[in-house]
Length: 292
Image (cartoon, rainbow, N blue to C red; front, side, top):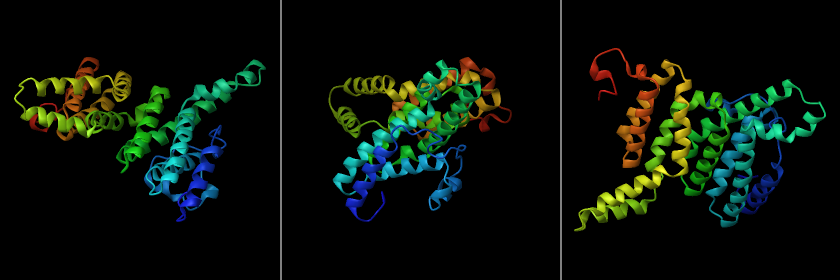
């Protein structure tokens, strides 16, 4: 009913979801593995009886972003409550230590085993792999600023608690979208102010505002998440590190802001210091994106 045509039904359904999902575990949602393709992600929406935890979690994310962009104000208010609940649930499911801390009593009584801890690790990896893929591909492209803010907050929270082996499969795409978000998510008022500063008589106004924008972007939460992702580059093999170079090249070409280009320069410097052999690409120099 969260997508019902009647707005009162949507308000009730969204509010009920915010209360129902509190304290749920991966097994409570249905268990199962990660969902890594679009066809599998949407195939179970019509057949909820056979849905796994990954399908239900993706459906919760889609319902939340839709309710945050609803035409009715009461639905949006309920969507904000649901967004806080879904964010807390998602971060907890992606953090194996969260469920482990809840079973401290069982550990003290000797009821927990290594198999239980291993299952918690598997469930957290499945949840993080499913959520990160959707947030990177769809979450950062929401039509409403409220939905984008919810997805960014959830993404940063998942990156903060996820382990290295969980982030590595999606690391190239994750780094690229974080680089683009450095400038893409800046307030539009900054562009207006900088345009006015460029046309004013003060010669240093434009440069001072540019430095201020770069300082704001470098000290923000997205920069912190990007720094954590860049610190994982050293754990990748050379072939995986080479996959980052086209993403850096694409970010330099598509990025319109100075913050994105400065972040790409720092990322390239980190990759050069960690693995110089990643830039040894065979072929003509014109085919090498780093030479361009």
